[in-house]
Structures are given as structure tokens and as C-alpha cells.
Length: 509
Image (cartoon, rainbow, N blue to C red; front, side, top):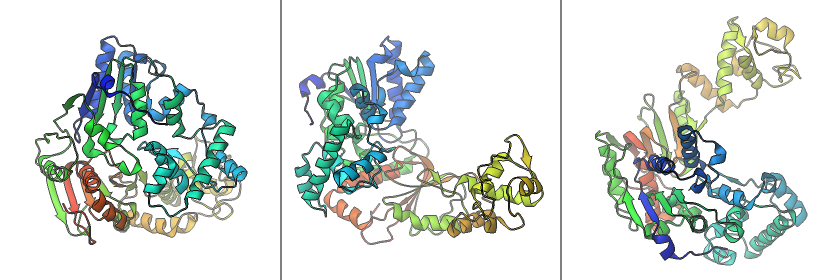
């Protein structure tokens, strides 16, 4: 159940801090925490809640060091779902896990066996089950399930959805279990309101209706409330974010006006995009003194990413495939969503294998990397991959490994020996070898715009194609699409490279 708090009570103590891209929203909030502690506000009377853990952890860690405090001194520096979990006294064993969904499936005759539900880095509850996804979204938007179903374009029947909902709720009740959203709904209905002097809410533009209601309950009796965010960067409306709430909220408004990220040329592009948003809070901000650079390209061909740090952004993950293929052909190391394109252990193994064949000694960790890429019973004798016979302090050569530690052969190239990796990865690593990138620092990151929110990079390569679904969404809600590209553009610290749409219906900048 969602609830509404009296606006008149809230309005008098609210400070709204609007932070355009790169203006230091988090740093500003950290200074507020510092000042409150200096003024004598007890740390357990301060709440710092956010959409994600990054800001809350940073604020707590900084305060701990500066004021010689511990984690226990800051019980209310956490995500909203963690706040609800704490106030309700929910233990880790009570949270629905994979085994619980399997058990529920068996007992209730529904298929949740492939369900993985978690709270991701963007503060969103994610699941690969369509029914659980929509049940969760209805709760986050404070909609009755029937109302949510009626307004959604889903391909399954209402009877299927309500059956899963009732079965799951019955299972949770009978087994004293909670899912992530329950931590919010249950806290809102039953949880106590702590005694707080100060409540700080970060990333407010991403809060759903349910999360807003939880925040209002948290700050109900607080003396000072600070709400930080930027409605122009609200890109999670599809997940239930209530953007209008921040736009219409009343209180004392201040705008952080100096960006420490975006140069003048990028600011010009950003200004052009943000002016396309029809519903927003007006705010002006200043770029860095540097001019920077904006370049337009008709295709990714010819864009040299060998120098400097790069962030490649798109609206959909599959649009990064062509960039990936090009980087693999060039042998350039890259990360996809923050993770290496190939395991670091593989690169270490290749390097170690070369040295081993040159009669050099290698370390225990080198051996571990090699054995990790050898098939048991083919490249290494069964039972030896666990490295039980090796000592971490020792070095090893070919002779010692083959005679005493299960290595079955060493007289072939690594791409023949390493028989547990895909041909595609082998080709990529061989290309890295050819171009000298085997031990090179990874300076290229590929990501969707949504996954890169909050990040920044010297060079940004922005793909402007839209999927069919994105095009339909742009026609229905152009503000949402404009916000997405505003976020994409404003990740840039120096040079922005814009690839013009390759398909009809792309986003025009």
C-alpha cells in the first residue's frame, strides 16, 4: 500500500538541490554531512539514503575517516530497500533467493525455476521472469495489479499473471519470506519512523512513487531535509521512476551551476538537447573553461580509439556489436559494462605460456591461470587443476610441471593448448598479440547509456541509432528520449564523437 503525506508539513523543511551534469552533487551532499557533524548532530540522527549504494557508502566512509567513527555510528546511511530491511528486522535468510523460487515453483505449480531477482547497480530490481517484472513494477508505481495490467501492452493473460501473483504471495507468507520490493511496501505499512534530525536523499530523479512515499515516511519528523537530483537526467521512467514528483516538489531550491566535467563545445550540444524537453525545472549551468571538441561521423570506421580513454555509448546493447567486432579485429582491449572482454586470467595465461616455452620460470599464479584454461584429462591430468601439489612461494618451469604437477604437454602454441576457450576469444587474443595489446591497459569501455549513468570519460563515442521499440517510445514520450541522449552527451570531459544514425528513425543531434 502506498500513502500520501501532507504537503504542508513537508514543504517547510525541504531543500531541493538540483545538480546538472558534473556539478558535484555528491560532493555537495558530503559537505552537508560534514557540516552537520561539525555542528554536533549525532551521526545516528542523520539519514543518507539513495537509489544506489555508491553515494551512501562514499558519504559514510568519508565521515568515518574525518570524524574517527565506525559503521555502527551511521545506521541510516544506506539504500532505501536496505533501510526498510533494517527497520523491519528482516534477516538475510528471509529474503527470497534462487532456491526459494525453485521451491515455490514445485509447491505452487508455477515456473519460477529460472528466476534470478536482484538489486542491480542502478538501484533497480531486475528479474528475468516477465510476471515478476510486472508485479514488481506495479508495486513500485503504486498501482493495483489489475490497473497496471490494463494499461500495459503485454502478451500474456490476466489469469496467468494473477495466478503467479497469488501463488508467490501465499508462498512468502507461509515461509516468512520477503522479496526486494516487500522491504519497501512492508516498511511503509508497518515499519517505525526513526528519530532523525537530518535526512539526505540522493538521485531523487530516479525514485518511484513507492520510494517517494518511503522517503516521506523517513523524513516525517526530521528538522532538515535535503533532496538532490536532476530531472533532466531522469532516464528510468520505464522502470517506474516518478519524474513529475521532483519537477513539481515545493521547497527551497538551489542549483549547482558550475560543471567540472563538460567543456564548452559539449555544453552547447547538451543545451540544445535539454531545450527539447518540454516538462522540466529550468536551470542554467556553466561549462569548464576548455573548449573541448565535438565531431560528427557517418560511421564508426575511421574513429581512432587507440589513444586516450574512451566510453562508447548506445541506447541498446546489440548496437554495440559492430563496435565490439571492430575492436576485436584491431586487437584493442576493452570492457563491456565494466567487465573485461576476455578474462584477465586468460591474458595472463597466454603470457605465462610463452615464457614457459622459452624455458623461463613462472609463478604459482601464472600456473593457476594456465591450468584454468586447460581441459582436465586433456591438457592437465585429472586432479591437478586444483593445484594441491604446488606451493605459492615457489617458481616452476616446464620440466617441474610436466614431471610432478600434471601438465600433459607444452610443445604447442597456447591457442592449441588452451582448449576450454571459444574460437572467437582465441581469435581476439591472437589479434591482441599481433598488435601488442596483450598487456596493454584497458582504456575503452562499452555500455548502454542507462548503465553508464553517473560515469564520465575523456572521450565519448555516442551511437544515435534507435531500436524499433525506442522509436515508438520517442513518438509517445519524446522527453524520455531527449533525457537519455542528454545523459549520454554529458558524460564527456574532453571530446564528443557523435555517430549519425545508420538506420531510418535514429536520434538527430
